[in-house]
Amino acid sequence: MKRILLSYLLLSMFISSNAFATHAYRSENCKSTTLDLAYKGNYPIGGMYGISLPGQEEDIPALPLFDTSETPNSLENADVIFTENSSIVTEQGETTSDCGFDHTEWKSEKIIEINLIANDAAKNLSLKQGDKLTFICEESTDYPNGSDCN
Image (cartoon, rainbow, N blue to C red):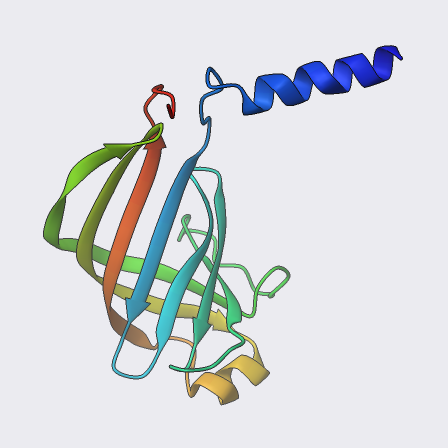
């Protein structure tokens, strides 16, 4: 009985109008002339990227390399490891607030460099280590703002 009561209380708190969002969300969809790059994770905790040919259903797991002083020599968690060499905001959108979140959109241009790539991914994407790619991106973030959704 205590377990049922506790479950009910937790569920009530979850769906209550006083429950606020606690996680930020990020969207990043980028296109080059030959490839798509999309962010697949929560922000700022992190997540995977996916890289694919346009129109492909399945993307290839890709991870950004943040510490360029130590490039890994094996692919344990992704088929592609890349460095973001530059990112320039080309168009800034306005921030809007809706249902507990502040939503911001912008466009950017990114240049990435392939640090390490698995053989199958290299064949599939026609890429090799050292390739530099320019992407035009549509990005957005949703940050909790503490307001409720009434």
